[in-house]
Structure formats: C-alpha cells, structure tokens
Length: 625
Image (cartoon, rainbow, N blue to C red; front, side):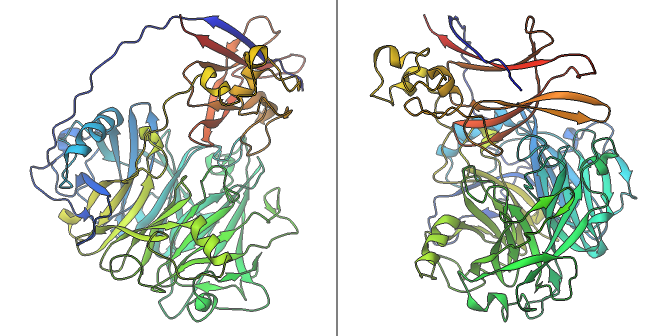
C-alpha cells in the first residue's frame, strides 16, 4: 500500500516559561527513621536507597474516596507499575498473606519525585526518607474496583508484572495493558487486571499450581500470545516444577480474556533432549556456571525437566539485543538464575510449529562462588531484566540482598571458557536489614527521564507490618536521558557531507530519501538504505497495515520516532482524500534506545466498504530565529 510522507522546513517561534523546581523537604513519612534497604555493611557500592512507604505509615488522608487504605496489610511482595499519565506512576503491590489476600494501588507524583531526585539525592548521605505524605504519594487504595471473572478471592498472590498492550510492536502482545499475578497456593490460578477499568479476571486456562509469575514472549505474530510460567514447588534437593509455556490465540471480538489470548490455549513443558534430566543441582545445574542444555517444548510432561521453586520469570527488554522479547530470565530459588531462549521457536496461530527447540543457559548457579561482598548469592527470588541488558535479582535467604548480573559480560566469559564470575559481573548492590527478604523489583528509570538501569522500585517483605517497605534504589551511574540534539548536530556527525549534501533536503547517496527523513527514521545519509521498518526493527521508513477489530477495520501506522530531538516534528495523520488531515490515535510506544522509540498509531475512523483512507507521517524541522 502506498502512503505519502511529507517533509518541510519552516520558522516557528516557541515561548518557553521557565519554572524553578524546589526540592521537597526530606522527611520521614511517619516521622520515624525506618529505612531498611541499605548498602551492604562495610562496603561502598555507590547505590543509594530511599523510603517511599513503610507499613506503619499513617496515610489515611491519601486514600481514594470510596476505597479502603490497604497497605495496612503485611507481606508486601510482587510489584508492577505503569504511567497513568505524564505526571503519575501507578504502582501495584501484592500482599502475600494467604487466603483472602489483596493487592494495593499507590499513585506516585512523578514531578515531585523527579525534583527530589535532582535536589535531594546529592545532599542526602543517610538513605533517608523521600518526602512527606502528599508530596510523593498522591493516592492509595485497593488495587481493583470490580471482578469480571472468578470470585476475586485471592489466595497468596506473589510475583507480578504490568505488561503494556502491544508490548513488542504492532498488535504483538496483549490487546490491553494488564497487571498479571499468580497465586502461590495449592491449586492456585493466574489473575489479570485490566488497568484501564481496574477489573480483575481469573485466568484458569493457564493451569493450576503454586504460581509465582508469568512473562510474555514475542511470538512475532499479531494473533498469538505466549507466556513462560513459573511455579514455586519443590525443594533444594527435589525438583517438582516443570518450566512451562502457554500459547493462546487472540479473539478480537471476544471477551476481555479472549481478546488477550488467555482462553483455550495450550500449555507446553520444557523437555531436555535425550533424557529426563531432573532440573535440580544434581541434574541440569550440576555443570555450574555457563552450562547449556538444549530442550524442546512438549505437551506430554512425562520426561519434562523438574525444577525447584521457580520464583520469578522476566523477559529480555534490552532494545537492540538479539534476545529482545524472546529470551527469558528465570530464578530457581535453590539452584540458579538461568535463561531460556525461544528465538528459534516457530509460532503458528495459537500454537507451536515444527521447530520447538529452546536452549537453557545457567548464568549463575547458587553459591557457585562467593563473589564480591556478602555471603554468596543464594535464594534467588524476584528479578527484572532491565533495558540496560542487566538482570537485577532479589534474594530470599535471610539476608535479602539485591544482586546485579551483567548478562553480556558473563556470556562472553563463558564462551572463552572462564566460568568464574568476578565482582563486576555478579555484584551485591544492596541489603535488606530486616529479617525476611527483598522482594519485587522493577526498573522505573525511563518513566523518570533517566537511562535504563538508573532507578528501581523494590519491596522489603516481612510478616511484621512495620518491616514492610516500598523503596527507591538509585544507581551510582544513574544518568538522565541525553539532552536533545538538533538536525545541525546530527548532520555534523557526517563530516563528508558538505554544501547542498548537508541540507535537510539533500540526498547525497541518491536513495530517494532526503536527509531530514534519514534523521527522523534512524537511517544513514551516507549509505543507500531506503527500506521499510521491519518487525521489531530499529530503523526504516514507516509501514502501514490494516487491522480488523470485530466488524470494523482501521489503518495502523508504525514508525520510528526520535525521542532526543529539539527541532523535529513527526506527526501521524489520516485523511479520506489526502486533502484535510486529522491526527492518529496513539496505541503504544516501545523504547528502542535512548534516542528512538517505535510508535504505533491507529486511524480513529474505521474503513468501511467502498471508502478510502490514507495515512502519512508528517516530518517537519523547526528552525529558530
């Protein structure tokens, strides 16, 4: 399908009102001094931690009208978060408190938190509290407002994730943004919440177990979803938990669960090739760090590998990584942190194709070496695979440390035959000073305008209410997303281009794409590289597809957009006759790097029989006076 792309240069004067940002007072939320997650004793990791909420804080005045204040529950565990709007980060916290459990909702004021990070952290050396009530925390309430399927009687919810709609690009992933959590109880189910309506649904077709968590995998298809499932069963000596893969077909015209592919799917088990090797330390992990075992996904679990306590799973979200969307990190509590690679798996409509092989790689076996500081890395629990390429792991062994794993560096060492990680590859960054564990960790860096791996939220869990805490952890290498660039600074990076060849309207390599569009769509003005954006791609010209939702069809545009430019406009527009143009409706954005993101937009007007619709990305360059 052909679609027009326009470019122009014009003069625009922008008036900017400058506001001074004043730091909030550094005060305890409850007047006390109760920071539990700290730098390891006797070390200087450079990390800093700050309390957001503690279990005994008095915050009733912040409770949303009509709802109850639920952080009076103890056993804080899994967390998930998403941007509610440009000034609010919405955080969900599970309460792993047995039958009749719940989860809470906490809204964080991003502007005040950003101001405090800039002004407060450099002057705070004591891991103090962030700010007073109403400055950082805007509102608190019960997590959900209604139940769409099931009874709503949660039993011991543990780990959790928020997954945005279309996580991996055009219609790839869930149809809705979901809060996904598992019940760590006998016969437990997975539950999902539609974050827009705050309606909670039980998802029985994912199976029953003592569930911890599930993480979405990129199938490369718009009609199929896939999830790696992790269950907390077994012991340090006996594995009873198969690593499982759910594959489901999306029904756009069906119910909430159906349109997200969570009804009627198939559950596969990971079977090591040629044996029924048990997944405990005496089996797959006996080779220690760097051990790689190939396996395949089978419906019959007779010979499936049986792991011990699969505490958490999370997908590789590092832009540009070969494993982006198809490689999953798994924490087996008594055994190892390992990865499973699904890049070679063939997905067909709601099922698996011929190729079903997935190798497993042991990144770090439990207590395989007493690296860095602390008493060795054991009790692997919640984890997150940050967009900076590193994995961050909570520890549940009475110390509650938080560890950083440099995945790329470890893989390179293992390839060279060096299986002993050093302190730069596996690093104890923080301690939880109270009894139980650190639990639940998510990277919120980009939401705050920082590069991935800079700022995290994590939870300190305890059966004692006053020892539960939501904390912020800040890396010593925390860095803001780079200042915006201009067309002039970008083109100056190609010194061979001078004169007319350096103009925005120039086309020095004669590929039919002017420099302005090369600048906008992450192309190279010195190389003939005119091509459409590929699925999961990082550069290329916009592409358009037709999507059908029920009885109505819409045009969808997917394009690369610069996030670090101060003089570029990339606007999606649609028209019935290429005369008058209207703005498209944003579906989702997916970070590619600190400079670019993939954007999905939809024509708000449906395409009916006998009608025409056109789409374009209008690219314009602002030039100052």
